[in-house]
Image (cartoon, rainbow, N blue to C red):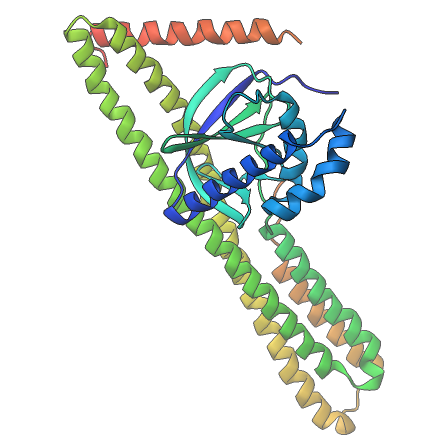
Length: 369
């Protein structure tokens, strides 16, 4: 079922000089593509694709998906108007977090910080989003719908790392039992040490990503707190000078910022929990590695004295199995994380926002804030 896009979100990009250059070079290449299409005869999209697609790719260097979207965009574009935007879809851009977005350019993908300018009603574009160039400002306008969730890059979570760690240790158990008769427990344990080392590197990288994300989230939260506090004074000044129109506008903006701050607060709490879990995972990995290294040492000693041991192979296997199962229980004992009426609802949302503005202004007048 296709869900109708109800409104748009506007993201103001904050690129570096190098990234801005890549974006403008991509716009220039896209203009060349549209110019090629202007000079190409085609009764429909299929004919245009056959006649112009390969020419566009060869002459402009645009990503293949961007060249394909240009064919549809050309049919909607007024030839008398300059080309100041580029259509985007989920393959050409993705929201990576609360403050960065990934965009495909002719020089490869770039990750650019952004700030939310706000929302507007309606989205009639044929594509999911549009990269728009306005003098010194570059924005992304994206259509959104009820229940919209931005795409996020998939990353390894701690539960996945622990599961892999458990499989490595379980492999030590099974292989030790299977190969005991051929006296190969040393090689098995050494391989386990190497595998656990690889998992540890991935876990440290995951922790680093989580810590960096936490710093960005907290910096953004501080910026919002400063803006909200600054608006307090501005609203008071507006009311004192009988400029309720200005005070009302500032109050609406303050309510919007507070909503963003609340969402950001939840993200900060989730990030803190993620960091705690990552640190616990690293401790589990360190324990598993120490156990595996001890197993190497024990296996090497056992190999030297095997000829003098009176125990049977079955007894030795039982002991190895018991030791390994104890290690699995210790390392993987951490429980996994518990895994119509749109128009009317929209109107109620507007009324609710107006009521909130009126209540806030009343509180300012009565000196309760």
